[in-house]
Length: 377
Image (tube, rainbow, N blue to C red):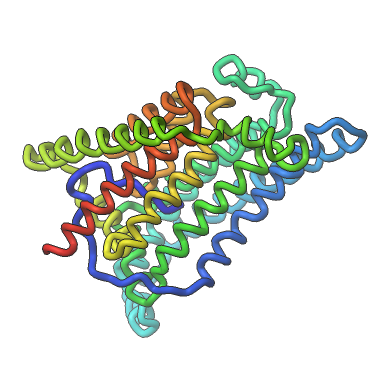
Protein backbone atom coordinates (compact mmCIF):
# COMPACT_ATOMS: atom_id res chain seq x y z
CA UNK A 1 0.00 0.00 0.00
CA UNK A 2 1.08 3.73 -0.60
CA UNK A 3 2.38 5.59 2.43
CA UNK A 4 1.51 9.16 3.32
CA UNK A 5 4.04 10.00 6.03
CA UNK A 6 6.89 12.49 5.82
CA UNK A 7 8.11 12.58 9.46
CA UNK A 8 11.41 14.38 8.95
CA UNK A 9 13.20 16.95 6.88
CA UNK A 10 14.91 14.68 4.30
CA UNK A 11 11.52 13.72 2.88
CA UNK A 12 10.90 17.22 1.60
CA UNK A 13 13.05 16.85 -1.51
CA UNK A 14 10.27 16.29 -4.00
CA UNK A 15 10.52 15.44 -7.67
CA UNK A 16 9.23 17.69 -10.43
CA UNK A 17 6.87 15.23 -12.10
CA UNK A 18 3.30 16.33 -12.68
CA UNK A 19 0.26 14.48 -11.42
CA UNK A 20 -1.33 12.59 -14.30
CA UNK A 21 -5.12 12.71 -14.19
CA UNK A 22 -6.53 9.33 -15.21
CA UNK A 23 -9.45 7.76 -13.32
CA UNK A 24 -8.60 4.17 -14.30
CA UNK A 25 -6.01 3.63 -11.51
CA UNK A 26 -8.70 4.72 -9.00
CA UNK A 27 -11.15 2.10 -10.26
CA UNK A 28 -8.49 -0.61 -10.53
CA UNK A 29 -7.13 -0.15 -7.01
CA UNK A 30 -10.61 0.16 -5.48
CA UNK A 31 -11.65 -3.10 -7.18
CA UNK A 32 -8.61 -4.82 -5.69
CA UNK A 33 -10.01 -4.03 -2.24
CA UNK A 34 -13.49 -5.30 -3.15
CA UNK A 35 -12.90 -9.01 -2.28
CA UNK A 36 -11.55 -7.99 1.12
CA UNK A 37 -14.61 -5.82 1.73
CA UNK A 38 -17.03 -8.56 0.62
CA UNK A 39 -15.38 -11.07 2.95
CA UNK A 40 -15.77 -8.65 5.86
CA UNK A 41 -19.45 -8.29 4.97
CA UNK A 42 -19.86 -12.08 4.95
CA UNK A 43 -18.05 -12.32 8.30
CA UNK A 44 -20.54 -9.89 9.80
CA UNK A 45 -23.38 -12.00 8.37
CA UNK A 46 -21.80 -14.95 10.18
CA UNK A 47 -21.72 -13.01 13.46
CA UNK A 48 -25.31 -11.79 13.14
CA UNK A 49 -28.11 -13.77 14.82
CA UNK A 50 -29.89 -16.20 12.53
CA UNK A 51 -29.83 -19.64 10.96
CA UNK A 52 -27.28 -18.70 8.30
CA UNK A 53 -24.64 -17.83 10.87
CA UNK A 54 -22.83 -21.19 10.95
CA UNK A 55 -22.89 -21.65 7.18
CA UNK A 56 -21.54 -18.14 6.56
CA UNK A 57 -18.79 -18.69 9.12
CA UNK A 58 -17.70 -21.92 7.46
CA UNK A 59 -17.70 -20.18 4.08
CA UNK A 60 -15.49 -17.34 5.38
CA UNK A 61 -13.00 -19.75 6.92
CA UNK A 62 -12.97 -21.81 3.72
CA UNK A 63 -12.21 -18.74 1.61
CA UNK A 64 -9.40 -17.69 3.95
CA UNK A 65 -7.95 -21.21 4.06
CA UNK A 66 -7.95 -21.46 0.26
CA UNK A 67 -6.34 -18.03 -0.01
CA UNK A 68 -3.51 -18.86 2.38
CA UNK A 69 -2.94 -22.32 0.88
CA UNK A 70 -2.77 -20.75 -2.59
CA UNK A 71 -0.35 -18.17 -1.27
CA UNK A 72 1.77 -20.93 0.26
CA UNK A 73 1.87 -22.78 -3.07
CA UNK A 74 2.82 -19.51 -4.78
CA UNK A 75 5.66 -18.98 -2.32
CA UNK A 76 7.10 -22.42 -3.15
CA UNK A 77 6.86 -21.61 -6.86
CA UNK A 78 8.71 -18.32 -6.38
CA UNK A 79 11.52 -20.03 -4.48
CA UNK A 80 11.91 -22.73 -7.14
CA UNK A 81 11.78 -20.22 -9.98
CA UNK A 82 14.36 -18.00 -8.32
CA UNK A 83 16.72 -20.90 -7.63
CA UNK A 84 16.37 -22.15 -11.21
CA UNK A 85 17.05 -18.66 -12.58
CA UNK A 86 20.12 -18.26 -10.41
CA UNK A 87 21.57 -21.63 -11.41
CA UNK A 88 20.60 -22.07 -15.02
CA UNK A 89 19.81 -18.70 -16.58
CA UNK A 90 22.10 -17.48 -19.36
CA UNK A 91 22.48 -13.89 -18.18
CA UNK A 92 24.42 -12.79 -21.26
CA UNK A 93 21.60 -13.87 -23.57
CA UNK A 94 18.87 -12.61 -21.22
CA UNK A 95 20.54 -9.21 -20.83
CA UNK A 96 20.43 -8.75 -24.59
CA UNK A 97 16.79 -9.90 -24.65
CA UNK A 98 15.81 -7.53 -21.86
CA UNK A 99 17.35 -4.59 -23.68
CA UNK A 100 15.49 -5.50 -26.87
CA UNK A 101 12.24 -5.47 -24.89
CA UNK A 102 13.02 -2.04 -23.45
CA UNK A 103 13.68 -3.37 -19.93
CA UNK A 104 16.49 -2.50 -17.56
CA UNK A 105 18.59 -5.72 -17.40
CA UNK A 106 20.11 -4.86 -14.04
CA UNK A 107 16.68 -4.24 -12.53
CA UNK A 108 15.17 -7.47 -13.91
CA UNK A 109 18.12 -9.60 -12.78
CA UNK A 110 18.02 -8.06 -9.28
CA UNK A 111 14.30 -8.79 -9.04
CA UNK A 112 14.69 -12.40 -10.23
CA UNK A 113 17.55 -13.07 -7.82
CA UNK A 114 15.37 -11.79 -4.97
CA UNK A 115 12.63 -14.35 -5.68
CA UNK A 116 13.91 -17.08 -3.28
CA UNK A 117 14.09 -14.58 -0.44
CA UNK A 118 10.73 -13.11 -1.36
CA UNK A 119 9.06 -16.52 -1.66
CA UNK A 120 10.57 -17.74 1.60
CA UNK A 121 9.03 -14.81 3.45
CA UNK A 122 5.70 -15.39 1.75
CA UNK A 123 5.79 -18.99 2.96
CA UNK A 124 6.28 -17.93 6.57
CA UNK A 125 3.47 -15.39 6.38
CA UNK A 126 1.18 -17.93 4.71
CA UNK A 127 1.63 -20.21 7.70
CA UNK A 128 0.89 -17.27 10.01
CA UNK A 129 -2.29 -16.56 8.05
CA UNK A 130 -3.36 -20.20 8.33
CA UNK A 131 -2.64 -20.10 12.07
CA UNK A 132 -5.19 -17.30 12.55
CA UNK A 133 -7.87 -19.77 11.43
CA UNK A 134 -7.10 -22.16 14.29
CA UNK A 135 -9.35 -21.66 17.36
CA UNK A 136 -6.48 -22.54 19.71
CA UNK A 137 -4.27 -19.84 18.17
CA UNK A 138 -7.03 -17.24 18.46
CA UNK A 139 -7.64 -18.18 22.09
CA UNK A 140 -3.94 -17.65 22.80
CA UNK A 141 -4.00 -14.27 21.07
CA UNK A 142 -7.11 -13.32 23.05
CA UNK A 143 -4.94 -13.36 26.18
CA UNK A 144 -2.92 -10.50 24.67
CA UNK A 145 -5.52 -8.68 22.57
CA UNK A 146 -9.10 -7.66 23.42
CA UNK A 147 -10.59 -9.90 20.73
CA UNK A 148 -13.29 -12.56 20.91
CA UNK A 149 -11.77 -15.75 19.41
CA UNK A 150 -15.27 -17.01 18.54
CA UNK A 151 -16.16 -14.03 16.36
CA UNK A 152 -15.73 -14.58 12.63
CA UNK A 153 -15.07 -10.90 11.91
CA UNK A 154 -12.25 -10.88 14.47
CA UNK A 155 -10.75 -13.90 12.71
CA UNK A 156 -10.84 -12.01 9.43
CA UNK A 157 -9.24 -8.95 11.04
CA UNK A 158 -6.38 -11.09 12.39
CA UNK A 159 -5.92 -12.71 9.00
CA UNK A 160 -5.89 -9.34 7.25
CA UNK A 161 -3.22 -8.07 9.65
CA UNK A 162 -0.85 -10.64 8.14
CA UNK A 163 -1.38 -8.91 4.77
CA UNK A 164 0.28 -5.84 6.27
CA UNK A 165 3.40 -7.90 6.93
CA UNK A 166 3.30 -9.33 3.42
CA UNK A 167 3.02 -5.87 1.92
CA UNK A 168 6.04 -4.77 3.94
CA UNK A 169 7.99 -7.89 2.96
CA UNK A 170 7.47 -7.18 -0.74
CA UNK A 171 9.51 -4.01 -0.28
CA UNK A 172 12.12 -5.54 2.02
CA UNK A 173 12.41 -8.87 0.19
CA UNK A 174 12.90 -7.31 -3.22
CA UNK A 175 15.07 -4.56 -1.71
CA UNK A 176 14.23 -0.90 -1.22
CA UNK A 177 16.80 0.10 -3.83
CA UNK A 178 15.22 -2.19 -6.42
CA UNK A 179 11.72 -1.04 -5.48
CA UNK A 180 12.78 2.58 -5.94
CA UNK A 181 14.00 1.76 -9.44
CA UNK A 182 10.77 -0.10 -10.24
CA UNK A 183 8.61 2.82 -9.09
CA UNK A 184 10.80 5.28 -10.99
CA UNK A 185 10.50 3.14 -14.14
CA UNK A 186 6.70 3.00 -13.84
CA UNK A 187 6.50 6.75 -13.28
CA UNK A 188 8.66 7.38 -16.32
CA UNK A 189 6.19 5.49 -18.51
CA UNK A 190 3.24 7.54 -17.33
CA UNK A 191 1.85 5.26 -14.62
CA UNK A 192 2.31 7.57 -11.68
CA UNK A 193 -1.28 8.73 -11.16
CA UNK A 194 -0.61 9.19 -7.46
CA UNK A 195 -3.56 11.42 -6.62
CA UNK A 196 -6.12 8.89 -7.83
CA UNK A 197 -4.26 6.00 -6.20
CA UNK A 198 -4.14 7.86 -2.90
CA UNK A 199 -7.88 8.55 -2.86
CA UNK A 200 -8.75 5.05 -4.08
CA UNK A 201 -6.71 3.51 -1.29
CA UNK A 202 -8.10 5.64 1.51
CA UNK A 203 -11.72 5.55 0.37
CA UNK A 204 -11.44 1.77 0.16
CA UNK A 205 -9.99 1.70 3.69
CA UNK A 206 -12.85 3.88 4.95
CA UNK A 207 -15.39 1.56 3.34
CA UNK A 208 -13.62 -1.46 4.88
CA UNK A 209 -13.91 0.15 8.30
CA UNK A 210 -17.65 0.73 7.88
CA UNK A 211 -18.35 -2.80 6.66
CA UNK A 212 -15.90 -4.35 9.11
CA UNK A 213 -17.66 -3.04 12.22
CA UNK A 214 -21.02 -4.30 10.99
CA UNK A 215 -22.72 -1.71 8.81
CA UNK A 216 -25.36 -2.37 7.56
CA UNK A 217 -25.62 -6.04 8.65
CA UNK A 218 -25.35 -5.82 12.44
CA UNK A 219 -25.39 -2.08 13.08
CA UNK A 220 -27.35 0.93 11.92
CA UNK A 221 -25.50 3.99 10.62
CA UNK A 222 -25.70 5.71 14.02
CA UNK A 223 -24.44 2.59 15.81
CA UNK A 224 -21.62 2.25 13.27
CA UNK A 225 -20.49 5.83 13.85
CA UNK A 226 -20.55 5.25 17.60
CA UNK A 227 -18.52 2.03 17.27
CA UNK A 228 -15.93 3.83 15.12
CA UNK A 229 -15.66 6.63 17.66
CA UNK A 230 -16.99 9.25 15.28
CA UNK A 231 -18.52 12.35 16.87
CA UNK A 232 -19.14 15.91 15.79
CA UNK A 233 -16.22 17.86 17.29
CA UNK A 234 -16.66 21.12 19.10
CA UNK A 235 -14.80 24.22 17.94
CA UNK A 236 -12.48 23.82 20.89
CA UNK A 237 -11.69 20.22 19.93
CA UNK A 238 -10.95 21.23 16.33
CA UNK A 239 -8.56 23.93 17.49
CA UNK A 240 -6.98 21.49 19.94
CA UNK A 241 -6.55 18.92 17.16
CA UNK A 242 -4.93 21.49 14.87
CA UNK A 243 -2.62 22.51 17.71
CA UNK A 244 -1.61 18.87 18.33
CA UNK A 245 -0.90 18.34 14.64
CA UNK A 246 1.25 21.46 14.40
CA UNK A 247 3.04 20.59 17.64
CA UNK A 248 4.06 17.17 16.27
CA UNK A 249 5.18 18.77 13.02
CA UNK A 250 7.35 21.38 14.75
CA UNK A 251 8.84 18.72 17.01
CA UNK A 252 9.58 16.16 14.31
CA UNK A 253 10.80 18.52 11.59
CA UNK A 254 13.82 19.94 13.48
CA UNK A 255 14.53 16.51 14.98
CA UNK A 256 14.78 15.01 11.48
CA UNK A 257 16.90 17.89 10.24
CA UNK A 258 19.27 17.55 13.22
CA UNK A 259 19.62 13.79 12.69
CA UNK A 260 20.51 14.38 9.06
CA UNK A 261 23.20 16.92 9.98
CA UNK A 262 24.63 14.48 12.54
CA UNK A 263 24.84 11.74 9.93
CA UNK A 264 21.86 9.86 11.35
CA UNK A 265 19.54 10.52 8.44
CA UNK A 266 17.56 7.88 6.61
CA UNK A 267 18.92 5.33 4.20
CA UNK A 268 19.31 6.94 0.74
CA UNK A 269 17.23 4.10 -0.73
CA UNK A 270 14.35 4.94 1.63
CA UNK A 271 14.61 8.60 0.73
CA UNK A 272 14.67 7.83 -2.99
CA UNK A 273 11.68 5.48 -2.75
CA UNK A 274 9.71 8.05 -0.73
CA UNK A 275 10.46 10.70 -3.34
CA UNK A 276 9.29 8.42 -6.14
CA UNK A 277 6.08 7.48 -4.34
CA UNK A 278 5.02 10.85 -3.00
CA UNK A 279 7.04 13.50 -4.83
CA UNK A 280 4.29 14.25 -7.37
CA UNK A 281 1.80 15.02 -4.61
CA UNK A 282 4.04 17.74 -3.21
CA UNK A 283 4.02 19.78 -6.41
CA UNK A 284 0.42 21.04 -6.11
CA UNK A 285 -2.00 22.23 -3.45
CA UNK A 286 -4.60 19.51 -4.31
CA UNK A 287 -1.90 16.91 -3.77
CA UNK A 288 -0.89 18.38 -0.42
CA UNK A 289 -4.49 18.64 0.80
CA UNK A 290 -5.15 15.07 -0.33
CA UNK A 291 -2.19 13.83 1.71
CA UNK A 292 -3.93 15.17 4.79
CA UNK A 293 -7.62 14.65 4.14
CA UNK A 294 -7.45 11.20 2.50
CA UNK A 295 -5.18 9.78 5.20
CA UNK A 296 -7.35 11.23 7.96
CA UNK A 297 -10.41 9.63 6.42
CA UNK A 298 -9.10 6.19 5.50
CA UNK A 299 -6.31 5.44 7.94
CA UNK A 300 -7.99 6.83 11.03
CA UNK A 301 -11.29 5.03 10.39
CA UNK A 302 -9.46 1.72 9.99
CA UNK A 303 -6.75 1.97 12.62
CA UNK A 304 -8.11 4.20 15.37
CA UNK A 305 -11.79 3.67 14.61
CA UNK A 306 -12.15 -0.03 13.79
CA UNK A 307 -8.99 -1.82 14.94
CA UNK A 308 -7.83 -0.08 18.12
CA UNK A 309 -10.81 -1.14 20.27
CA UNK A 310 -10.14 -4.77 19.26
CA UNK A 311 -6.35 -4.93 18.96
CA UNK A 312 -5.38 -2.39 21.61
CA UNK A 313 -3.37 0.83 21.45
CA UNK A 314 0.17 -0.50 21.00
CA UNK A 315 -0.51 -3.34 18.48
CA UNK A 316 -2.64 -0.98 16.38
CA UNK A 317 0.10 1.67 16.36
CA UNK A 318 2.59 -1.02 15.34
CA UNK A 319 0.40 -2.17 12.43
CA UNK A 320 -0.06 1.47 11.44
CA UNK A 321 3.71 1.96 11.33
CA UNK A 322 4.31 -1.21 9.32
CA UNK A 323 1.84 -0.15 6.61
CA UNK A 324 4.32 2.59 5.72
CA UNK A 325 6.27 0.04 3.78
CA UNK A 326 8.70 2.30 1.93
CA UNK A 327 10.55 2.83 5.23
CA UNK A 328 11.25 -0.88 5.69
CA UNK A 329 12.29 -1.32 9.32
CA UNK A 330 14.11 1.89 10.14
CA UNK A 331 14.19 4.93 12.39
CA UNK A 332 11.42 6.44 10.25
CA UNK A 333 9.21 3.45 11.10
CA UNK A 334 9.77 4.23 14.77
CA UNK A 335 8.70 7.83 14.20
CA UNK A 336 5.45 6.68 12.57
CA UNK A 337 4.92 4.26 15.46
CA UNK A 338 5.18 7.15 17.93
CA UNK A 339 2.76 9.14 15.80
CA UNK A 340 0.36 6.18 15.91
CA UNK A 341 0.61 6.04 19.69
CA UNK A 342 -0.24 9.74 19.95
CA UNK A 343 -3.19 9.40 17.58
CA UNK A 344 -4.39 6.33 19.49
CA UNK A 345 -4.17 8.18 22.80
CA UNK A 346 -6.19 11.04 21.32
CA UNK A 347 -8.81 8.60 20.06
CA UNK A 348 -9.02 6.98 23.50
CA UNK A 349 -9.18 10.28 25.37
CA UNK A 350 -11.52 12.07 22.92
CA UNK A 351 -12.74 10.37 19.72
CA UNK A 352 -11.65 9.29 16.25
CA UNK A 353 -12.80 12.56 14.70
CA UNK A 354 -10.27 14.51 16.72
CA UNK A 355 -7.55 12.02 15.72
CA UNK A 356 -8.53 12.73 12.11
CA UNK A 357 -8.04 16.47 12.65
CA UNK A 358 -4.61 15.88 14.18
CA UNK A 359 -3.55 13.50 11.41
CA UNK A 360 -4.78 15.79 8.63
CA UNK A 361 -3.08 18.83 10.17
CA UNK A 362 0.21 16.99 10.56
CA UNK A 363 0.22 15.68 6.99
CA UNK A 364 -0.86 18.98 5.45
CA UNK A 365 1.81 20.88 7.39
CA UNK A 366 4.48 18.50 6.08
CA UNK A 367 3.00 18.68 2.58
CA UNK A 368 3.03 22.49 2.61
CA UNK A 369 6.64 22.43 3.75
CA UNK A 370 7.45 20.09 0.87
CA UNK A 371 5.57 22.35 -1.55
CA UNK A 372 7.56 25.37 -0.38
CA UNK A 373 10.83 23.50 -0.80
CA UNK A 374 9.73 22.47 -4.27
CA UNK A 375 8.97 26.09 -5.19
CA UNK A 376 12.34 27.41 -4.02
CA UNK A 377 14.64 24.65 -5.29
